[in-house]
Image (cartoon, helix red, strand yellow):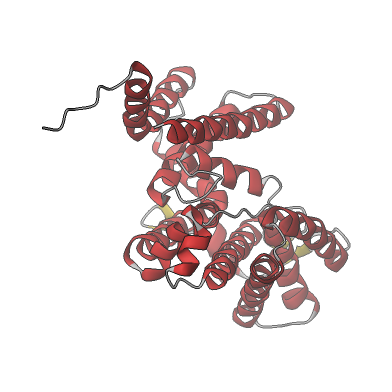
Amino acid sequence: MLQKVPTSPLAAAFQRAKAWDGIGLLAVLVLLYVVLSLKSPYFLTTDNQLSILQNAAFFGIVAFAMTLVIVSGEIDISVGSMAALSSSMLGVFVVNHGVPMPVAVVLVIAAAAAIGAGAGAMRAYFGVPTFIATLALYLALKGLAQLLTNNFPLPIDSERFFYWGDGRVLGIPVPALYLAGTFLVLIIISKKTVFGRSIYAVGGNAKAAGLSGINVRRVKILVMMIVAITAAITGLLQTALLASGNSTIAVGLEFDAIAATIIGGAALSGGKGSIVGTVMGVLFIAALLNGMVLLSVNPYAQQVVRGAVVLAAVLVNVWRTRKSSLE
C-alpha cells in the first residue's frame, strides 16, 4: 500500500504562498483603494475612476501584449520609443505631407509591425537576446522620432481624430474602450488558440516545444510584432489626446508595462503569466499614480515611487521563481 509522503513545513509554506498569489494582488489593490479614498475625498468619485481607466489605457494596452512577450521568455524595452516614433510619424505624414489620416494611421501601424517583426527575427534567426535588440531599438527609435520632428510638436487639426484620445461613449473614455478591446482580443488569443498555447509552451521550454512541432521562430516573431503594434496604437491615442505628433510622449511606458505584467504574476523566465493577472497589475499602477497626483506628491518623488514599484515587482518575480523551483 502506498503511503502518503509527509509534507515538510517548508513545502507547506510554499503551498500557502501559492494560494496567496491568487488573492494577494486583489487584496493589495483593495487596500490601496481604501488608503487613497481615506486620504482624498476625490479618489472614489466617478470622474476620477474614469480618469484612472483612461490613463490606464496609455500603458495597459501595451502591458497586455507584453504579457505574451514575457510568457514566451522574451522582453521588449523599446515600446516607449516605438510609441514616440509612431506619434512623430503620424505628425510628419499628416502635417508635413498631407497624407489622409486613415492612410497615415495604417502606415504607422504597418511600420511598427515591421519593426517588431525585425526585433523578433533578430532573436529567432540570429540568437540576439531581445533585451539587447530592443535596447538598441529604444535608442534608435527615440533618435529617429526626434530627427523627424526636430524634437518639436507637430500640431494636428482633426476633431474626429481627437475623439480617439479624449472622446467618450456613454460616459466611458474612448481609450478605456480600446483597453477593453485589446484585453478581449489578446485573452482570446492566449486562451483559445493554438498560437496562444504555443506561447506558453515556448516560454516553458523552447527546445521541447520545437521538438513537439511548434514553430518557435514564428512564435517569437509574432509576439514581438504584436507588442510593437500595441505600442503604436498607444502612441496614436496619446497623439490624439495631445493634438500633436510628439517625440517626447510615452516616457517610462516600458517600465509601467513590464511592472504591471510582473505584478500580475508573469515570470521573467517565461512560461507563466496571464492577461487577467496583468489587468490587476495595470489597475494597481494606474490607481497608485492617480493617488500620488491627488495627494500632490512631488513629481520627482513620484519617479522614485515608480522605480521602487518596478524593483519590488522584479524582487517578487525572483521570489516566485525560487519558490517554484523548490516545490
